[in-house]
Every structure is written in structure tokens, then in C-alpha cells.
Image 1 (cartoon, rainbow, N blue to C red):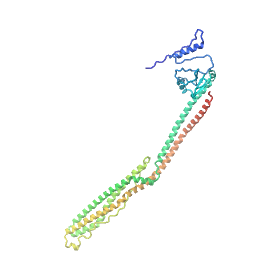
Image 2 (cartoon, rainbow, N blue to C red; image 1 turned 45 degrees about the vertical axis):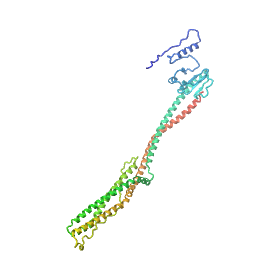
Image 3 (cartoon, one colour; image 1 turned 90 degrees about the vertical axis):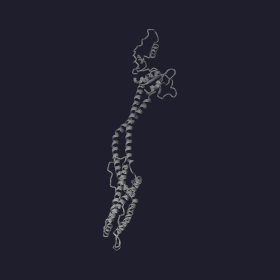
Image 4 (cartoon, one colour; image 1 turned 60 degrees about the horizontal axis):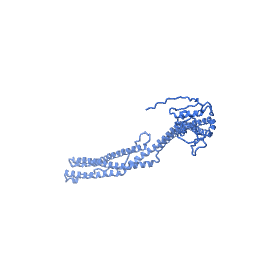
Length: 429
């Protein structure tokens, strides 16, 4: 529940008509007021005394909150001691958060190990004339220390801005410098090592596919050639068909091998391109490069030409054919063609197998050449990017120069103020 506000009480002290000691009457009346919980503040006007006119004395009851004096704008705090001397209390500790020092009056000495901000100020009589100067010094110290705190906070804030900017500058340069490739050869060697096994496995699959493709082509040609021999209706037609096969078959076999070879090379080139694009993507990771990846990459592997043909030779020689039928001669020619086709398949397989050991080096070699060129382009881009970034940082740093001037001025002013306050504090008792 909300606590109802206290009703202010204004009460003037009346002098008793009976003849009594007026000081005793004042003391008794003050004690009665302090004992009344309804009394928050007590104002006493003194007609005369040893205190300067500009000094306002506020006495803090022992049970009162010291922070009330902060709202009152207290400049200095005096602790009046009785016969037991000075003792630090929680209330006095709170006062040290408001004023720079505590000045002890009426005590012979301070206890051992006393707080350094507690000063011995002599007797009541000696303290009174010094109160104005004391309050002015304490006020100056309090204001000065608040100013020092403001200057220190400003210096810290400016340091944070400048140091944060410098850290950002270093991070931007370090990020780019981390993209530097110290050696193109070593980088390329490591990159090729990552793809070599995949390339080897892929070339094995391509070799099997090329062999199957070439073998099927030879098989189809063999079937067509056999059909042409079977279509012969006479021995002369058989001889003519065999001679035509011997003449035409080398070119047909070479075309079949060239077709399988071209499919093999095209697939290897595309495979090399895929690896190259992947490696370039890894190389450009973390960069802002948007230039197109060059596509000038070709894999070439020399292969022996397929110069052999059916080599049926003289089918149905005239001397021996006089005593043999067309069917017998045709069967003999077909058997000879079948044997020749088997040898042609072996020769074609041998040609393809001969190039297998050269496939992986051909792919990785083509990738290596293209990748090294890309590393050179990367280095050129990085040099230009570093130059651009350093120029941008120089421009940003120039804009921070004004903050640095303000920070240094705040630091210098803080140092001067500290020295001035130290000199002022030395004037205190």
C-alpha cells in the first residue's frame, strides 16, 4: 500500500518565561524535536557566532540517510567528536561518496589505519574561520573530480571508436593478405593431388566405354561386310566384294576409332573443365571476384591410326576355284573375314589400352596449366584489391584524425586538471 505523505510541521521554539539556562532550554528542545519521527528537518537561525555568514550548517542526525545531503548540495563534511573520539560509521562512509573528505573536529587524533580521506581539523574554535576556504576547496575538488571522470569517459569512448576502427582496418587487410598464394607450383600440386584419384577412376570408366563403343562399331561393320559377301551370286562377284572390302575397310575402321576417340577426348575435356571450375571456385572463395572463368582448356592424347583392314586378299583364285563351288568359296571367305575381324578388335583394343596410362596426366596437365594461369590472375587481382583497400583505409583514417585530436586534448586536459587538484588538495589540513 502507498505510504501517505507526511504532513509538514512548522513550529517555532518559544523562550520559557521561567528563569532557566537558555542553552539548556535549546538543547532540550532540539532533543525533543529529534526524538519526534514526524520531524524531517530542523532549521535553526543563529543571530551571531564564530561562523562566517556565507556558511550554512546542516546537521545530520545519526539515524538519517546521508544521501539527503547530496540533494542539499553539501560542499564539505565536518564530524564533531566527543570524548570517545572518531569512529567510522556506515553513515560517514556514505558521506565519502558525496564529498571528497571528512574533517574531524574536536578529536585529539585519528585511529590507526584510518581512511586516508579522513583529515584531522583541530578544535571547534580553530575550525570556524577556515570553513569558507575549506568548503570552496572541497567544492572545487568535487567538481574537478567529476570533470576528470567525464574527461576519462570521453577519452575511453574516443579510444574505443579509434581502436575499433583500427582493428577493423587490420582485419580488412589481413583478410585480403590471407588470400595470398605464396607459390603457384606448390598450390597447383596440392590442388591436383585432391582430384587425381577421381580423374583416374573416371578415365577407367571412359576407357571401358570407348572399348565397348569401338567394339560394337567393328561388330556392325563385320556384319555388313559378311552380308556383302553372302550377297555375291557368282565367284566373280565374290572376288569383287572381297576386293572392295579390302579397299574400304581401313577407312571405315579408322572412322570408327576416331569417333570413339573423339567421344573419349570430349568427355575428358569436360571432366577437366569441371575440376578446373571447382578448383577456381575454391581459389576465389572469400573474394569479391566476379570475372568469368576462362574456358580455354583442351585435353589431347595422341592415338595410333587404324590402318589395317579386312586383308582378305585374293578370294577364290582362278586356278583353285575351278574345282570348288561358290558356296565353298563363300564359306571360306566368310571364315577368313571372321578371323580378321577378331584380330581387328584386338588391334583396336590395343590402341585404346595404349593411351590409358596417358589419360590422367593429360587431364591433370591441362588443369595444371589453366590453374597456374588462374593463380597469376588471382595475384594480379589481389594486388589491385589491396591497393584499393589501403587507399580506402587511408581516407577513413583521415576522417578519424579529428577524433584523435579531441581525444589527445581530453587526455591533456585531464592531466592538467589532476595536477591542479593535487595542488589544491595539498592546501587542505
